[in-house]
Image (cartoon, rainbow, N blue to C red):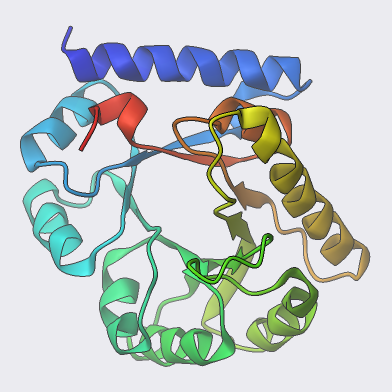
Amino acid sequence: MSQIARNLEEVQARLTAAARRGGRDPAAVKLVAVSKTVDVGRIQEALAAGQKIFGENYLQEARTKIAALGAGPSWHFIGHLQTNKARAAVELFQLIHSVDRLHLAQALEKAAARLDKVQEILVQVNLAGEASKSGAPPEAVPELYRAIAGLPHLRVVGLMTMPPWFDDPEVVRPYFRALRELRDRLRQLDLGPLPELSMGMSGDFEAAVEEGATLVRVGTAIFGQR
């Protein structure tokens, strides 16, 4: 067994245990292996070990990998997306995690219409108001979601956040809880089921799963330090 396969086995075991601690079905949580800067050979090792979803931050890098590895894996875009790259993102990715403004959503809608595709997206939320990070402020999310919901070639399936970084996952936990509570408020406004919550990374994904994450974005714990 390769080191990547062993790492995946350990991460999956931790994910399963966290789900059970939270009273959840482990099958409801999907592992996104963050493969930015990871070469094709190491991604193939993860594929051989059963990993199915990969997250990329950079379009040109992702294009090369997707061309090499084909349509077998599910590819998610998890980085900041510029509007002039909307068409490429729609061409390449099954799910875009980082839609944080209406102008970007409109560019994705135009691209998806040209490709006759309904593009699934997540609305990225900046819960801490960090200037260094993308994301809509939580108070703006209901209006943004309503506007995007009127675009026929986009489907909002949930929310994503990147909370501040702390050594202690317990310090991050309130941000995960806040995203789940925001999703629940949107449901009460009859704004759709929004089944997906993308939150949690290598250092804190267990707390995220306990708080309701359905997609965890794990890179270092699988592929090692970049």
